Image (cartoon, rainbow, N blue to C red; front, side):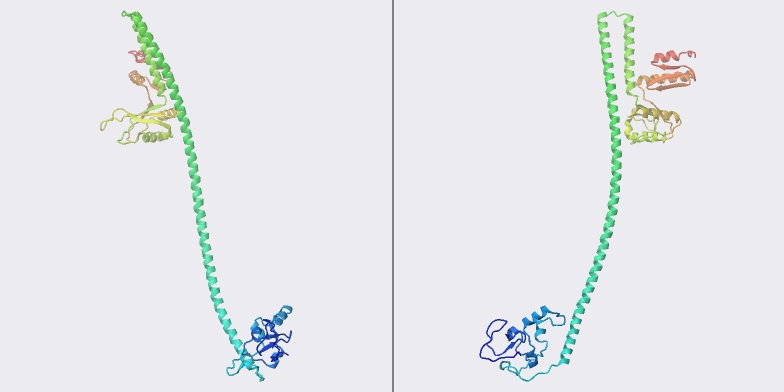
Length: 410
């Protein structure tokens, strides 16, 4: 049985292993070791009955008993172990250093139960309030997270839509760039063809000019050898040579103009774009014409006076086939009218000698009532009627010989 001892021999505390110098200490009913008040964890104001002393167990034995068995119904706090069967009160008039009183205090069980119930209600109220506020805060945070997630999703959808539209624009731009590259490649091919044509014509012209220079040198040499008294045969030969040289030069110029057109009576407006007017005229005739198909386009001659006749338009095309197509469309649409209401004429561009020759040929056909007079590849042709002979005119002398006072027979 555990009790306070006042023996002369000082016992040793099982908690701090020091001698107990005071008269108040506890003895464990399980291990029978002594414990001073400080190590036992009981305050000075605690008084225990004899029954309580017979059941008091030290903290070490309590811990060993917890580890060994089912402790679900046992108290978990040290204070609950030590004072589970102790009723504490503070007696201000008692001297605790003299020992325990023999009187036994009865336990006020009902008062303890009421205190426990009131404390449990307070604890439940204290714990319910934070839990309710915590749940409300968590719910509001969850709602904010959901709304933010929806906003992010909407923004992602809008961004995806914008990226799809941007990709579509990039694809269209890539297609247009490809078309432009194809057009540029076509222009490069046409420019190469033009450069080859120009180079070939230049070579031909150079050869012909060298031939003309050699012939002139030969004529000068013969003339110097013949002396001042030149006969009629020499003059006639010189005239024939000059005529041949003029014809060769005319042929050279004619070949250089095989891709050109002349447009007459096209209305002229101050500050106009001649190229645009020609493109519009070609579309009216049903021939698609683009700026890349035109090498140059300009009006020739002095500007007309107010109300005067419009100047001729000279157009050089990149392809000879396109020029022939425009000429065929112009022959089909003879009554083609321009914006100003005047009839527009589209013809081949002729050299100056061939233009004069064509004028003489038309005058002769009008005088003798010949039905046909035309040009083809820079050459002048005439025919009296259907099924008659076609005459090619090379010089004004040939025109005079064909359209003399008496018309030639069929």
